[in-house]
Image (cartoon, rainbow, N blue to C red; front, side, top):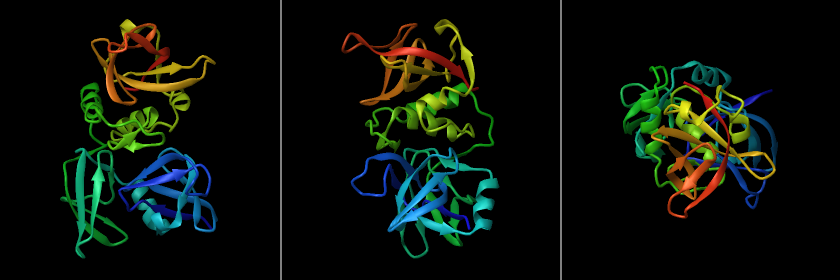
Length: 259
């Protein structure tokens, strides 16, 4: 029997192995739904529904939901928090801190609900049924400026390069895989840097030729990406150039257009 769950905490670490000492490879954000594949002691092996990414989470950090609720959440128009920070409060006084990119389950008139428990929310929202364009993608990406780099992170308080691109596009119904080399399989290839438009995504490889980095082109020969922190740097046909360090930091491999 397949079991389903939903993240009811601000952020939950997803680990490579069922251990607190294992590295974090991903994060669940409040509202993310999961499929439970296996369990080991206090751990669940799960797949996140939006990208089918696999990892282990602590059983105490997920709420089990029925199949009918899971299907209902999967079919609804998704609303997302569009502020860097928000708050959800239920009738018992419990409050949950929400972050940019949070999916808001069963959103109606500044309230959300999970398994019959209602929360009033204090934040601005967007819905992924609205038309998307390059301006809104760039505006949303810029909200993450200064977010510290965190391997496996997906929030303004810690994020990695592919998590950054995934969350920004996911808020507008464009669901990408979790890792950069898999994200590179989506979209239409743009052959020359001077043909790029804001909202295109650029991928970069290492010395072995493996794609290991990704960012969002914002126009005027600039790219926003997570490297140390979410930052804006110059991009050209060779790659990303850091004006402060006066050197290229990433080697351009391919550019894709999703919009």
